[in-house]
Length: 308
Length: 328
Image (cartoon, chains in turn green, cyan):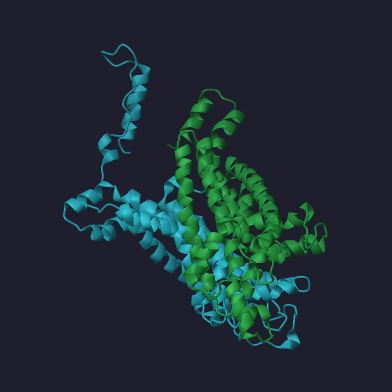
């Protein structure tokens, strides 16, 4: 187990270097002069521009810029934004909000996805199975931003039960609707996945054996059907936590949440390479770590899998 | 069948009295003769996996419904003028936000354009992005996955690491960062290329696994022993035998790409605003939600139905090609 963990952690390094290099190259290719963008409409003095370029390493070739970024990133020094604030501060302000939002969405999709999936899978063919299936298909085929608008309109404007937008320091109630919107598509996928797994395990040979031994229905469901059905669901959930943070960009824009997605969007608009690359690096890191945790969880859930 | 009558009478006779030489009742053999069950018409060519799948598909109501919807969507995309008479870009401010009337079943949007006409004409943009991206993703992802899975060794090591790198970047996140560069471009290809750039990974991973499974089957050893070159073997035998999961993923992803395109257009970095598209219209209608929800509703419905039909088609195809993982 220890050796496996070490190997996996070492494998993460080239992935993270490759991803940051890719993103850095893409952002570097953004057209427009960032120094001009900083000053907006005002004309820039050449000497000032040169000094700013030197300060942000903009005068150096691409690969040197990238290596400098990587070197500083190791000490968590991501440089400053164009307005002079350290990037790490900006991330420190925005990231906790996004983590809160993503975790709430994660809990929402996990709990409701699994519960509805189990109900549908165990009672396949009943009318509520069909209802659950149709609703989940609808959630998948409607884009998140439409779900967001409709939710905002119904809960925020028409019935006025939940706040329309989240303010500067959003609490649980402010994030409730955004989290449900953010998690809705994944919830639908989890419902479908759980339903298929439960339905196929329900007729498996070991379940018949367990019943034949006289095991109670409840125990068969809990110990045999559910445990075996949830393994792929956990994989999906783990991989999804990472993408939830990336997907939060849309939800944060609709509900005006000052999280990492909104910050990233602002950074892209202003062409702030360091800010964009720092945030993407962070998101990629979270994603890769989540996948590692999922692989390790496998061994806990499925005793047949052992890492050597 | 014809022999059944004498059999039953014989068994009835047996039931009444044991036959001579028998001490107790022995049930007669009522099995169908083995030859009848096992006889296979060898003169006919064996039905292939695809023929079997097609037979299963035809009987699946899910397939029929989704196929009808997809054909309809395709028709609308190819011949929008058959379904809507007017010009989607003809707008009259006099009609701004007018409710539905005769000849204009969905009403008008803020600029006084006919929502029905725009929804019909928007089909082409969304569908082309979905179809073109899927084609590109299957070609690129399929080729990379097939090469990695088939050759193994250092080829696999290199390609798999590249796949890992792209896998770590979520589709929308990557697309937003890249598309920002092409804000001024007026073509739909930018959206197609960018979605394909971050979308090929899922197909590559599936193809790799499926090729690795297929390459160890006996017929490959046989064809190699018969002297077929490795590359020919890959294209002649391995790829056709590992296509099934790829087709399933491609069909379902097509819907996802259409949703992604709409999301990108909503952010203002997808399709050019001059192009009639569902994403653009939904985005324009967002501010009108409180005043005129129907302007948002119709293009969203069209989008949802299209995506839904491709997802259902993916489910149906999976049921037909891979009976082990049935969804229904």
